[in-house]
Length: 115
Picture 1: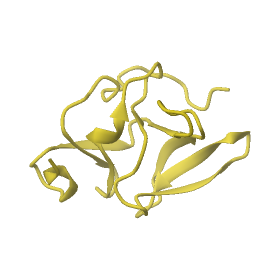
Picture 2: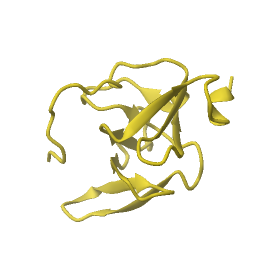
Picture 3: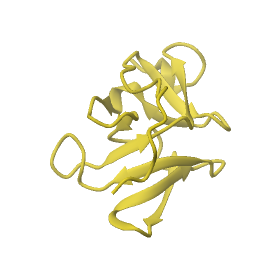
Picture 4: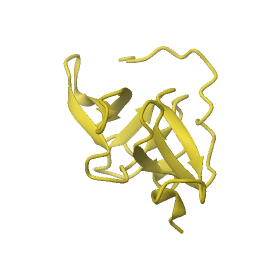
């Protein structure tokens, strides 16, 4: 089942520089580049959030194996979490589109200062 259309220009698909991905609307820290991994979707994928409240999740009515994900601070729609579809057994996969902004390591957020 497809949840999003591919329009091209997904700039973070093959982007693996150290840093933090934040909400493009409010700047809240969402994902560390350390939790990002390569996969076949054109959108960036992550295995975990930076903070327990980085994202809010609600059931996707069309699929019991997916959750709609929004920013935990401002509610901006981010993408989906696919349950038990991560790079390791039992891990989930978060995928997102243009709702993310990248902050390079050392350029602004406390999480971007991580080793």
